[in-house]
Length: 67
Image (cartoon, rainbow, N blue to C red):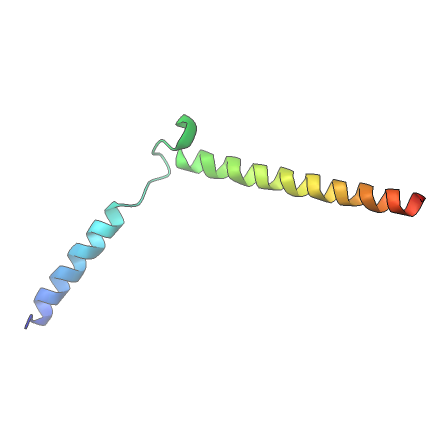
């Protein structure tokens, strides 16, 4: 059976390996942009899509009220 120090060392080693697998914000991501830039582009696209859906809903309601 492992003692507490051995378990602590194994746990620390596993956490270090897991932390090393994550990407930093400055690493190149899809399309040659950094990870943070890709996230910002995704956020902007989501915002534009939500505005487009809201505008389409407003037009549909206006068209229904005109008939």
